[in-house]
Structure formats: structure tokens, C-alpha cells
Length: 478
Image 1 (cartoon, rainbow, N blue to C red):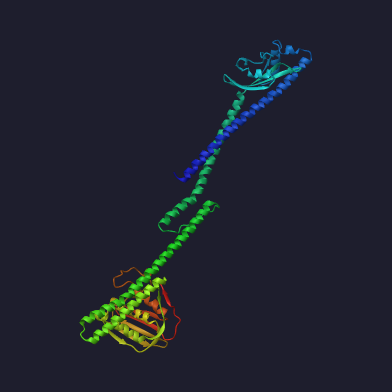
Image 2: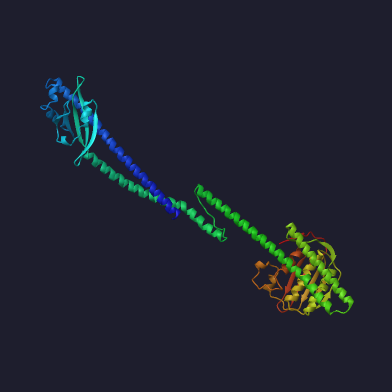
């Protein structure tokens, strides 16, 4: 059963019980007040009748004994009952009714007479056939002695009719109040349940990871506090989940970049190892062995750097700018990639001149490897021209291939994060990380990278390095 129905049933039962209690109390109070009022009225009539009877005795019209005798008592009772709505009876000291203005003597009990002859005023309610009678009996004292008594019988049927009419009106009014109260209760329960229903719907959205729903409650009560607490919880959960996603994405990018960069020295090591099997001259074998050792050392340094970053919780590429000869680094990089170029049947034309710039040698070589490997894997070229030239305050490395090139739309997205690029298949040879990483590393060194390409006309990549000291950042955060 829903909470709204439970509240409605609870309010209904409570209201019905309250109305029933009010009905009992009101009915009892009205009945009691009417009896008390009639008893008081009959007492007042007794005082008037006693005065009138004493006046008759004092005027010497009849004696006190004659007043309570069978000769005069019926006349006195009829006289006293004239112009009244009750029956009058007179009884003697023996308790015998000697005068009666009506005919209800045989229906009445006599306990009230006994109480009156004992000196007490008695009130009794008794029921006869289709009637309910209020009996009021009081002793008549004369010269300090009880000589008889007056007894009044009031028919309560009219009172019952009045009470019945009042009960009917009370029930009608109570039913109207019950209807209004139930409508108000239903509206109130709906008002209470509306924010709780909204909270329930919002919780369902939270279970599927949607924290956008906010609960608005205008009342100043516990429901408002509950809604505010839920909104705060939802915002906190959303912030924590976004932070977890950010950290997860940052770690993934970092490790993707690292694994991408580990491929280059491994490829060179494998390439030079293959060349050793085909060489006969000891000098050529030693040269290959030098580059194998060099690339192995570089690979070991990258792994150690990764371990240090993991221990420090600092997932970043570190850049240390210094003044170095760009020509030597370019020549050495091409020599390391020579087995890969030879295996892909790509010839190279190199034109370099000495040029000292401010850079990080390791990161610069990392950029050169990425750019040349992209040309080997994706351009389908057969010729690769590499030129190093010096301009006013910078040195430019131009790497040009005669491959298939690319359109403007594809070229404009080369340096965008993978999440902002149009979906394309990721092969085992390409993870979409190289050029974005190259651009970030170049900018950290104070340089830049640009790409010019036309479909069917090859591609040119230009790396620019500063010849003057630059204030570069030391970390590349993911």
C-alpha cells in the first residue's frame, strides 16, 4: 500500500473516532443538561405549589389533614397541574397516592416516594409503554413534621424528539465535516507526497548515473531539509564521479602515451638486430650494436621515468630545456630509424647545417621519431626529404614526403584530442596519440609544429625551435 493511501486511511480513522467521541459527549451533555433544567424547573414549581397550599391552609379554608386526604387531594392536584405540561400527584405519610391529575399511577415506581418521606428530594427517570417519565418527589413539611408530599411526572417524549432532531443535525454536520476533512487530508497528503515522489524519481535517475535532477520544495519543514540534503548529496556524488572519470582518463592518456613511445626504441632495437644477421663486416656490426645499446638505454630510462612518476603520483612528462645542437640530434634520430626506413623501401635526402637551439634533447628526439614514423606508416611515400635551416631567431626542421597527402578537414583535426575527432578505426600501428603529444612537447620547449598537406601531393611537417632562451613549462600534465 502506498504511503499516501496509508496517510489517508489513518486520517479517516482518526477523524471518525473524533466525531464519534464528540457525538457521545454532545448527546450525553445535552441529555443531562435537559434533565437538570427540567429538574430545576420542577423544583421551582414545587416551591410555588407549597406556598399556594400553605396559603390555603393559613386562610382556614381547609386543614392540613384535609389537604392530604382523599377528599381534597384530587382537586388540589388538578388545580396545581392546570396550565402546566406535567402531572401532579399528592401522597400521604403512608406513601399512598391520594391525589392525581393524570392516569400514570400504575406505571410509576415508588422508590422516590420512600425517599421523599425520609426527608429527601428524589428524582427518578423511568420508562413505561412508549414513554419515558421524569419523576420529581419532595416532602411537604408543616410545623417541622412531614405530613405528605408532592410528586411531579414529566413526559420526556418531547425531549427525546428534540434530542433525535439534534442528533440528526449533528450527524449531517459531522458527515459534511468528515467529507471536507477527507478532501483536505487527501490534498495535504498529496502536497506532502509530491516532493517525496519527485525524490523517488530523482533517486531512480541517480541509480543510472544521472545527477541532473534537483528537488525544489518551498515549505519550511523536514521535507525541505530532506530535499536540500538530497541535492547536496547528488552534487557531491556528481563531483566525485567526474573527478574519478577525470583521473581515470588522465591515467589512461598517460599510459597510452608511454606505451606509444616505448614502441619506437623497441622497433629500432629489432631493426638493428635484423641487420646484424645480414652484415659481415665487424665495423658495421659494432655500429648496429652501439645503436642497440643506445636505444636499450633510452628504453630503460623511459621505464625508470615511468616508475618514478608512478611512485610520486605525478603523471606528467618532464621537460628540461638546454642549449644543444639540433643537427646532431636530427642526424642521430635518422640513423636510429634507418632500419625501419630501409625495411619500408623509403629513401631519404638530408640537408642539415649546424644550429644550436634551446630544447630538451630527449623530447626533441621523441618528436622526430613520431613525425618520421607517421610518414613511414601512413603516407605511403617512397621519398623522404629532411632539411634543417636557420632563420632569424629560430631553426626549422622541414620533413617532406611524396605520399598520398590528406584533405583540409583531416589536416585540421591532427592535433585535436581523440575525444573531439570523428570516429575512425584505430589500428595496431596507430593509436591517435603521436601528433597531439608532439605538439604539446614542442610548445613546452617554446617551439611549435605545423603541418601542410594536399591530397595526392604529399605532406610537409615543420618543427620550429627557438635560438634564444625561453621560459617554458617543465611538466606536461595529461
